[in-house]
Image (cartoon, rainbow, N blue to C red; front, side, top):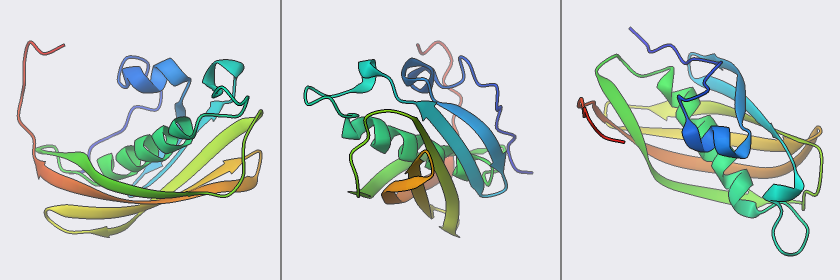
Length: 139
């Protein structure tokens, strides 16, 4: 049975909370997440840091794949290739992600990141799928 992804995920994804990332949709092999661009996320040149866009795509991929995992499975990023098409200085970033391929041990996902509807980046990621282990007491 696939896992359910909590859309109201405060505390579920602390790094996502830090950058203001939230999910609006997570269904079988698909996710949509977004964040508001703020000055705190800019690089020294006054544009959005590329790592924020990368993080949005990576987290979106994790969310989409999470909905395709069994209760005893987990996943981890192996690699992500991203192409940036345009700088971002303000507005809302939205990332739509879909699972392109899923086998027992590997998954490939694709994300499109838009800034107020304009395509600004595209990413393809490979994820490892493995049996989850319970790790209590880790912080």
